[in-house]
Image 1 (cartoon, rainbow, N blue to C red):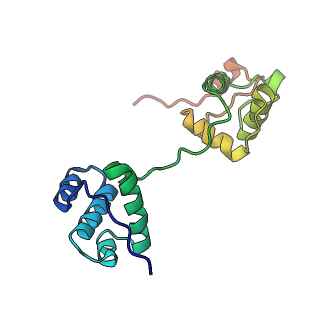
Image 2: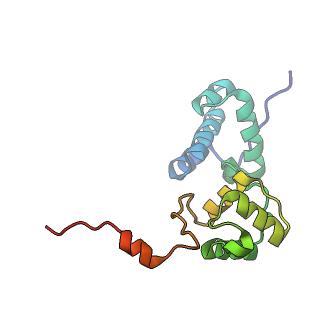
Length: 169
């Protein structure tokens, strides 16, 4: 059975505990305390249990600590794939949504996600799923709520004549 992987020796157990107490990241602190326990001579299984992990996970964190030091113990989350629309295209899409549809050109009186999906494909050549259009709108600061659309042939004078008003007290 191969031996355990050695920890780098430029940090002592008290040093790691001091770094853990100053860290603002709870996960990094847990990992630093587990590594400090290993340096104190505790078994790897018990040290892993202190940090709320198994022995194999502790081994992975030892590798990252040996390569990058205490900064290697932070979580590194992926940012995901890059957006298929550029920032300029997103700004243009926001202007299109703000302006609203033209009933003659667009054939609709209010935007739906499926309509915007078509507009994005026609203008920018990018295909998004209808659900992703909703996520994109939310990132641009739009809500899924919309005002009730006005009929293109609506007459303001007729609406005012039929409006119900309450008598004053």
